[in-house]
Length: 237
Image (cartoon, rainbow, N blue to C red; front, side, top):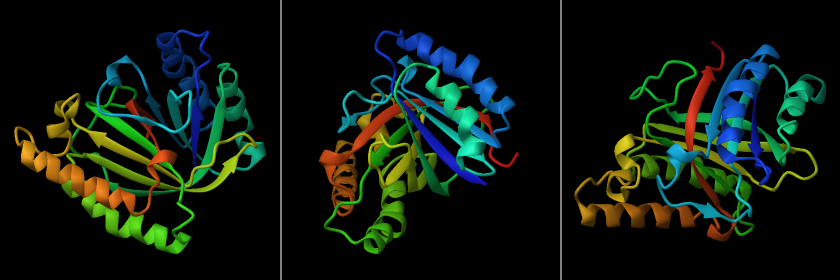
């Protein structure tokens, strides 16, 4: 089984709320009917707006992420999935990834199809040329992971190593990260950095995250988008 992450940009002529509604109510059922083994939507919708700071190396910013698990990511298998997402009318990029679930969501169990409480931050970045690939993976996956979970109040932490981009116009990314934060962190950096009511701890944790990320991310090549998560089908279920 392979995991694909589709990255979607909305056609500016389409209303944002309608774009997100169509993904939930029209596109998701079709993807399930096509045989998706797992399906998760992450939508940069009104409910996630202002949840935490964003970074946009890619302009305009992406507005939706669709994670689909398939038996194979070969063209013949994924073609109907590609087609229905392209039919929305905006730009679509897609990536085959290797998924590592460092922290599963056991804190906010949510019925399938409903919005997960809080918000999920999606970060996409490249490996800096100054860092060899094996060293980059070691820093990110082995060293940084615990720093991220210790210095932030996350209930979900998934790291996706990009294996290949599908399509000639998919922007270059080597990593896609999904981090879940509780409702209390929405618009509150102290809660976000696991320091509710403690400004000094917040600043310390912020510095820890910044210093750790600087080892394996060039910030001018970073995209960070806040989203609402909808799990439609758990992979392997």
